[in-house]
Length: 300
Image 1 (cartoon, rainbow, N blue to C red):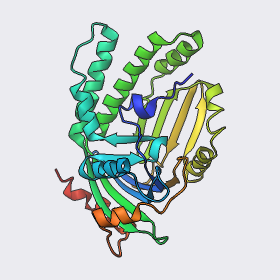
Image 2: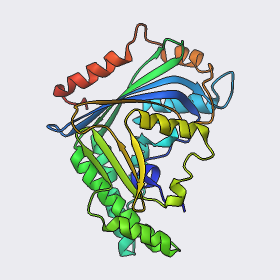
Image 3: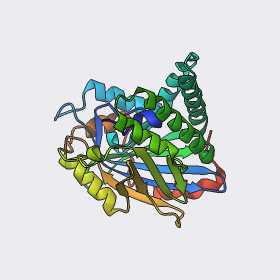
């Protein structure tokens, strides 16, 4: 039973399907409760192409160009999700036809509301490319998300409607029981307390026990996620993900990717010649400057 659908379906984000990869990623984030704004600094370490050992393919060049000209950011490759504002706009444009089924219509309205709010409140600013101490090309982004509390409320409502629709389509009593039990619990599916992010979702124990069983890199990623303070557990028919602390003002996590390929030195020339490389660039200072400037508010 493939019931864990948070990354693509429940959060209405688009899964990363391109071929540009990166060896690891650092995410530094801070939720400012007073302004209800979440600021995220992204650092992508060791960018490379997966198609060809010697060079980035035409498809990868197009993807990188699309990222640089659009509102698009990635969270730990295809393990979590990609946030693509242009794709959200396309999804919103295609969601305008009312459903005759009342349950599906409620889901459509909840999803439309969430899409509208995401488009209005998310800004992705592309930063600089640079070389790390290994001589690998790296990149940065600055992500600003406003009205976080409203977005979480809308997101949780959309998730609830998703599971209500899913409930009607599940063929077995076991699947329906898991969803029913999850819907009956009062706590939100996604919460943000201080800097701690919690996600819960109905998920069969038998499938939970198989996560990473045939994927050594995924097992390594999960182990690293746990080592840096995250947790993934199974409780009462649900998978629970948690990261961050409730009593701090900022969190940082660096994780390897769960991709199938290892780093290849094939993107440096293209990135240098097309986008240029910053000299003496310090991504930690860049993150500090971005987060420290929160009082000025996001650029629009």
